[in-house]
Length: 212
Image (cartoon, rainbow, N blue to C red; front, side, top):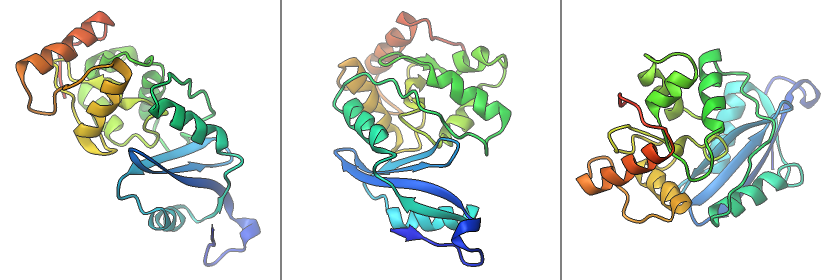
């Protein structure tokens, strides 16, 4: 499928490459610009044609399906979802983000498989210890979930915090998969569930003193 611009010739438009594929977590859409991977979207109800139309309207681009160029990313995501630690070491296109957002996402990108960090830890790591809430807001808009593992950032009180791709339940599922845990807490959960999250945080040195 190719999505064409309205007022410019194809030769004048920036090209975006994309691929859609299905997994047990839902349908994925990957988008890559000339600078690098720029978007990862997934959900049970994802409408790829609608998302591509939205991207075209917002950025005036030529979107071309390209399974060859994005094959490694697809294979890596499938491996990750099967429980295999994956190093998502691709070039990323964060050119539309602010310097603050790029710093947050680059820091979170370095959190290892199976580890958890707090929002406060991320704020301190980027040199803005009072920016816990802006860190949370940035991660809520993360354009590259899983590749930039924002699901590994939780509240220091043991609650999970939000997650844009499928909500808190999806965040719980990804953490469970990486840690071999079951019954981790949702937003308002048991003291035992929060204790287990705090234990994972403290064992990795990722605890903080503020929550989002």
